[in-house]
Length: 276
Image (cartoon, rainbow, N blue to C red; front, side):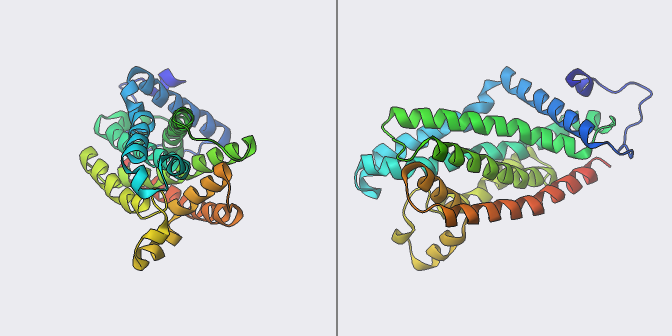
């Protein structure tokens, strides 16, 4: 099925959106086929994994061994504080690829091929996000292995680790839906990367990812407390090293659900507009 999706349209195929409905089972199969196509691209270009693997390790080394003594109570304590935040940052980095990849597919004419086929509009978006979820999972495995290597230790249990990773995957899907919408609204791949970097800065640095909110000015603390990244980071800290969990997880899930309810329909509608 992947080969069929990638094959160029024949001379008798009219370009334009297909109006016939696609049933759920077919849409799921189409999503999986497109996800497989995206994963094959990664196989042939492993550099696409750098943002989900190498970059988080670099940030970890810089913050632990350069800033750890100043920010935390020594490098050992700061490792325990930092690693859950780095895990969330890994998700944030990897999610940005969704928008850039969709934009590049439009600029290279791949979307013209998809448009000429009787596939669900949502299949292209869900296939892209499914492939990126695989990247997110790989990134979490790599950063956890690296964290153990430099001395990080889980203080809870296996269930806590699995719950933390599951929450991170959900948050990654939510961020990917935002990135997908941005990638479909903006026409230039370079602009997508710039905008993606800009909207992610306040979510990352205006949170408890790298430093306790109590060290920040009052006006910034007000933002940090309602920042979904803070809720996800604090949830992961509780699940991995101990601490409050229920309230943070509830808030995280509410944010994730709200983002998906808003941006998934917006992304699907914007995709439909660009393929008219």
